[in-house]
Amino acid sequence: MPVVEQEAPPPPPGRGERLLDAALRVAGGLISVVGGVLAALLGLGLSTVRAGGHLIGVSVPVTIGAAIALSWFAYATVGRKWAVALPALPWFALMALAAVRTAEGDLLVAGDNWVGLAMITCGAMTFAVMAFRQILSPAQSRHDG
Image: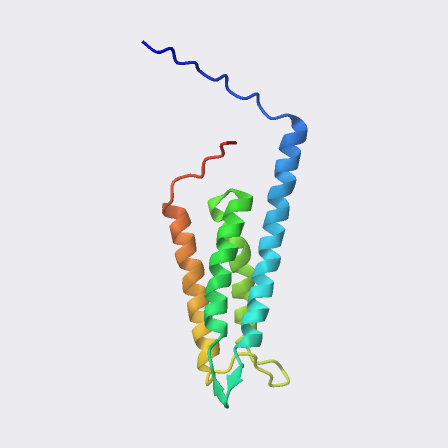
């Protein structure tokens, strides 16, 4: 019979390692929030891009890609399922502000801009799907290997 050696479990992390881990998680969360703001601003800026006088909708795939990447990044760096909310909340807040007319009459996303409306709808759906996937996924294992 072959002899199977069991590895000794790794020693528990020291105080310095725990502090570094917490600092990296907080930094990942902050980067996720900033990424959500930047994704919203980029999407709003691209929602009026035209080619030949026609809206081309480039902000829709950019917003979908950004929502997927930011949701993944937030979960990977923070390590908690709720982390998808970190980029989603500022993105939603900026979209809500963009859809409200200012006192001067300015409006970033007008009702007649199909690209802006599609961007908001697709971005919201993408963040919702990513959150739903995180809720249903098994817990992330943290093995050093």
